[in-house]
Length: 449
Image (cartoon, rainbow, N blue to C red; front, side, top):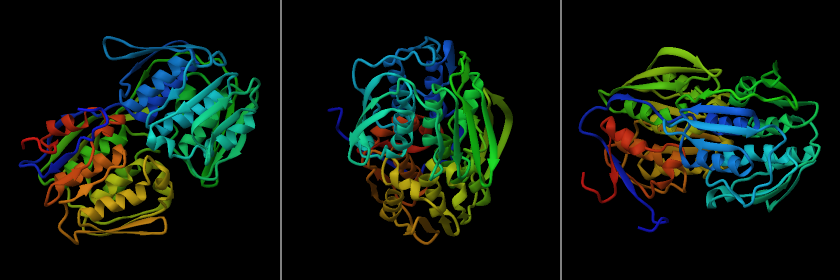
């Protein structure tokens, strides 16, 4: 089969409840950052639990091309030996970031503040995504950028020989933009200041402290002021990557929706700026219990016990979006099965994800009989109004949309088919076998049941 040949899959309601104990792959956001910060530090950092999805492997390859030693060990851990802050070299070839907007945007911050030249590209989906939101503030470091109209990849970066510190207020809350600016500020003499209008995931700040950087964070109105002192000596520091809460979302919602289900997910990251979905599901009546809470490399971790629950509609405030921005497609599935109406507010950011996730989520639900509408930047879903399922979902190369549609099929009255499952591995390698291990009925289209 040609590598470009789509691989359709279908999901249907299983004959028995989901049951079992699983661990989801490592947190994608933390995995990207672990490789980047370790590649800027002096010494050897051992990373355990790294997500080995395609997106993260692209980051590993990019850091290797920039002069860091990056290797996977026989025991599954990764070893990164960085040349030290400011010591990266120009890559010999174009950096292909695949489907990863996080990797591309964060890497812009590293490239902008090093005296090197590099060109980045990506797959068709990534080349459609806007990079101007990082290019414009990073230009103030003294770096030069050349991109296609709209700031789209391919992107050529000429890093600043003497990068300037930044003082920038984010117009829209974005952990990716914030992290890119912090990465640039690391190699600039002086203090970089970033204001965010509301708190976003703080993995970069936690990791900066873990590697020895001087960073101060102050509450400012509804947001935060972050001050980073540049040119620290980052020291190698081992990292244990927790399970990704964005990946855990899919088996969680499946277990909530399939009657009689009860599963345990071990070692999930519980950073309070990443658990908006868990809070929302609990407001809907979800039975989710945390046990064995602990801390690893500055991040809160715990095991989750999830039991099937009768969900009710919910009104999700816009200010919760930064803590669950990647989880809205799977939350929309939960809302479609809940009793009564739900309104998910302030979802403008979904329009610039791997696909226009706001439109794509709406299309997915409509194709499967749900009552759904977009009102401005809000998504309105009336749960329990119709029989669900039976549709074909066009995934648009979006891994989260594909997994959400498969979960829909597991709970629906009729099977749901997705046009292509290949892109799931960008964030959740082994998703389908893992779900099958719990009892899910997911198979390649045309395969025997």
